[in-house]
Structure formats: structure tokens, C-alpha cells
Length: 513
Image 1: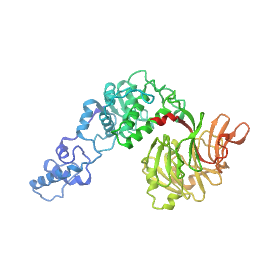
Image 2: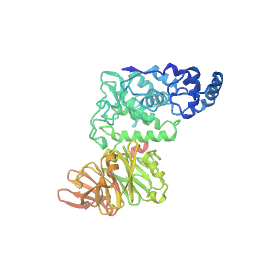
Image 3: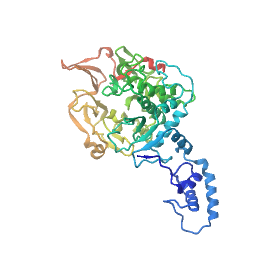
Image 4: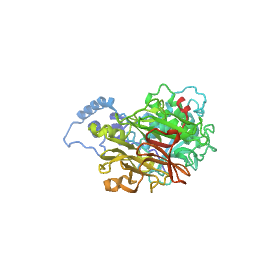
């Protein structure tokens, strides 16, 4: 293992004068870097034209450029002072020989520094425990972290045993004061800070995870026993709740913190807080969204949104507005993260053709992990982007007459569970490949038409003997597996629906946050 490496001494003078504290220059810095580097000591990778130039002239030019460019220091760099501050509180080690410790390079190191700075600068104020957070770390989240953790260790992506897909960080098994961090890039400071506080809680014995019983986490041991148990998820939720209530933060960060707090409150506790109910989100043909659970049904939004598509967006439900291309991660009309940034929304808004935008039928964000790409479904093409944003493909499907995407879960109506399909206007389903590479290589030929004409827009199993589906005509129906017959859902008789999202957890109390 090796510790945090420092910059080469040969470049310290030039770096200090030209773009402190960065080593990776933008184009406008290159000339200055060359000049000062030549005057003091040549730097690898840079050279002059070979013409003879007097050193005093070079020095004057260098000083001119260095002073004139100081105001345009790259905004994405972490300052040397902040990095030194972090090193004064924690020991940084790495097992990744390729990890860059440069302060202007996007890496897990700079993400870690930004997260630590977020905790350091978190506004101090008095808090009391309530139904949403238990005030575990009080007014100073950084002090809580520092009291439990002394060392941060970076792992390489090649270490798939300790950094399997989806893993982010964890307490070192042989050193409870150390946290191992996997190379996940571009995590914002809010999410990183919540995660590292979560792991700091695990440094104290007795705060392990429990089985999840509800929602999308129900197959994993990734929950706390309860909010009152005050474990790792309770600490992470506490940061989100307090951030959402901190008036000095901008509205976008507060909205995001609120949405993240609600997500964890709904899904990360074996005994749910806030009288949470389990049910479905149903979107009618008029655009109204209804939550329907064991305690009955109620409007999920204050008003219908005819142009919006109800979709799953990673860990939460969302609305994709076909008029504007805006995406909102929502939990009610008063609990939305407005106009969330993302590749799919940006792709849609970049279209030059209004007619093309108007032909949008559906959106999928990696189909809840069923595929490694996200797609926009139009009347003539399905346009998909690889999950890392590095590649995209447009597949001509006008011969299909597409209607919408269909996620096949635990249902007997489609042969492959946990797969993504496109349903056409006649009710035939075409399975999409699991990988972006297969989709790009096979184009329309990679879409496998199913033999059975299912005639369904949505379908999911709701119990051992019953399934629920939306027919092509918009009827919401139950299928009795034992009897082999369809019957209307009594509570929704006479209404027409576009889509539903299953296994949604909800409580009206969430709106109080």
C-alpha cells in the first residue's frame, strides 16, 4: 500500500504560479506553463518552438499570463488548501496504482474530497429528533465522521470481490476505523456524504443490516431494523432531511435531499416508519396519477398532467413531460425534484424536429436494471444510450407500430421474466436484448417477437393466484390463475388507464417533510 503521492518537485513552481492547485491545464494555460516551465525547469510533454528567446522576455511573458489568468482557474478543481485540510484529518491510502490524485481530474479521490468538504461546511444549527430523523449526529456531521473514521482507502475497479457491480464503499473488516471506497465517479457531494456517514455508523458494532421486506429492496439484506434503531440508513436519512430543511442551501439541493430522504424512508427500514402503505401508481388516460393501496386510493398529484409519462427512473417514480422534455422524480405534487438532469432528457430536448418529439411514446431508464441502456420510444424508432453515455443507437422499428415499453416481472404471460419488451399496436411483444452491444449489432433483428399475442400494455403478479394487467383498450383487469379468466378490477371499473407502476410504497405523511 502506498500513501497519497505529492506533485513532482520539478513542476511545483510552475503549477503554483499558473493554475494553483491544478496540474491538468486547459488550452489557455499551456503557453504559460511552457514559458515558466522552460525558465525554471522544462516539464515533460511541453516544448518551445526551438527558437532562441531571451530568458527575461520569457519571464515577463510568463508573469503576465500567470497574473492575467488567475481569475479563470478551472472551476472543477479542488483547492490545494482544501486537500491539505482533508489530509490533516484523515490518512488516505490506495490499492489502485492507476488512481490519479490530481486535483483537477474527476476521480473517486476528488469526489471524496468534495464530500468531506460538504460535511465540513454543513451549516451548524440546533436540531431535535422527530418522525423523519433521530438527530444522531446533532449539529455537526463532520465531527461524527471524524469521531469514528481515521483512514480512507481507495480500491481498484479490478477488485471485483470487494467492489462488485453497484458497490460503493464499506468499513474495512480488519480496521473498523477505516472505510474502503470503490471507484464510482461523478457522485455528487450530498449522496457521497450520506453514504460515508452511513458507513461511519457501521464502525460501531451492533449496527448491522437486516432483511428488507418491502419494495425494490425486498430481496436484499440492505435495510435497518427501524428508524428508531438509529443504524446506518437512519444516519444517511438524517443528513438528507436536515439538508432539505436548511434554508441557506439552494432550492435544487434541498429538493434533491428531500427526494432522497423520502426514497430511503420508504424502502430502507424493515419496520416502515410513517404508516407506510404498499400499493400501485396508476395513470389514467387523462394523465391523472392515483396511488392505490391497502388503505384505498387517493390522488397522487393535485392535477392531471396529460403530456407526462409515468415512468420508473432508477430508484423512484418519475414523470417525463413530452412537451418540454423535463423529468421530475416525484413522490407527490409537493415532493418532486424538478427538471432532473440526465442523458435521456437532454437527448430528447436536443431533437431539432418538433414532429419527432411529438411522436414520443415511452421512456425507459435501464428498465430497473434489466438492461444496460436507456431508451426513448418513438413511433418510428427506438433511440437508446449506453449507461455510461459513451455510445448511442437509433433502431428503425416503424414496421412494428410500437405502442409502449413493457417490463416483464413475475408473470406467466411472457416467457422471460425480468426482461424489457416493446408492445406493438396489435398486442405482440418484442423482447429487447439485455446489452447495448447486442442491440447495436443486431438493430431491429435483435428484437425477438413473442409467439403469443398477449394484448396487454402492462402486467404483473399481485398474489400467488392473481395477476393484474392493462389491456390495449385501457381496461384494468385481474387474471385469476386458478380459474383461467379475466375480470375487471371492481374499484377501477369504468376508468381507462395508460400504465401502472407496481410495488410502490407510500404514506401521506411523506408530504409533511
